[in-house]
Length: 235
Picture 1 (tube, rainbow, N blue to C red):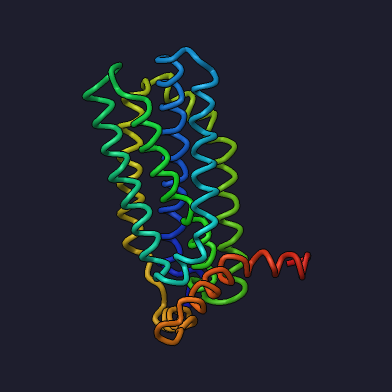
Picture 2 (picture 1 turned 30 degrees about the horizontal axis):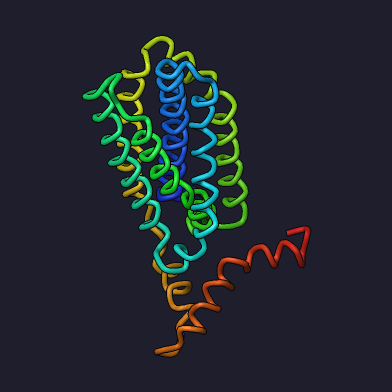
């Protein structure tokens, strides 16, 4: 009997990330329409996706520190569950307050969600090689993830606009909450193999009281990838 080169945990990872990406596109589109209807300002509406990108960029910069400190499945679970809970708070607040909702609070919740989302892609990319059987499986896994990312990126915005036009922003937010909940639930199925968990957790063991060494190690962790790219441009 031929075994699959892609494991069950990988399919859970692929599903949860695709669902989360689709939910991101939906709620950003819905909130952009809400802000535009409220303020009638294109600048305010455009600030929503720009602020989300900025929060993800800041979060991505500290992702290496988190990935060194915590297990990757735990990071993904924290990110997806945190985003789901924050989005529930956002959706309930908008439903209760309606047109009286404070945009500053809405932007703050979106910033927090985007910050949590910033380390999911690095954690996902680091997990993929650990969840597939061999090199052929890695090629297939990367192809599936790349295709799903591109489909959500290019088709998602157009489709989300149609959904917002048909359902309205409020009902679109409810649909997004369901998708976020499914994404968080599927994350529970992402299990890192035991042999892959034991290595990175003890990589940076420092002597007690060595604050300077700890600071140096953190800086090295943050800049290691950039140094490799600079020294080996073809990486």
